[in-house]
Image (cartoon, rainbow, N blue to C red; front, top):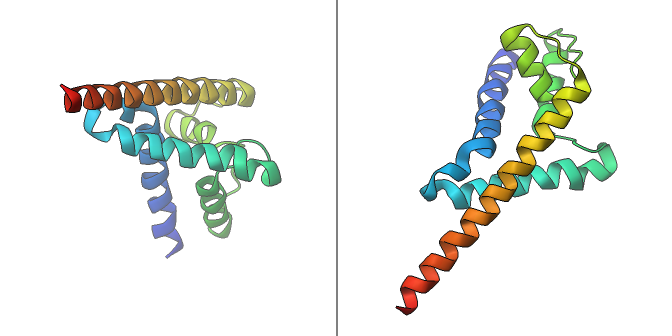
Amino acid sequence: MLHFLDYFFFVFHTSWTLFNTFGWMFAKLRKWNLATLLLTTLSWFGLGIWYGWGYCLCTDWHWDVRRQLGYHDTSNSYIHFLILEITGADLPHDLVNYGTLAVFIVSVVMSVWLNYRDWQRAKQVKYD
């Protein structure tokens, strides 16, 4: 079961991350993208008050599974972990964390702006 959970978290968490990053590009997915970005924000900055800024529930659960499987991961973030696992590059943690934050901020700004624009257009069409 632990191997299944390890695989599940790789697929689910990576998909969530990619959707957060690129979901705003697709009009039909923008509302869902805004919702996943909000949930990520609540985890990073809401739960982060108690567990440390940038705390991610998925990462925490995945790390628990991997510890039980005998892995000793040294990454302090899921993105750093993915980069290390996929490419073998052990980039500086701060570089990855600041890069992750920058991509996240761009994604939030784009999602909010495009969702607002879509809402304004729908409202305009309704009254025309």
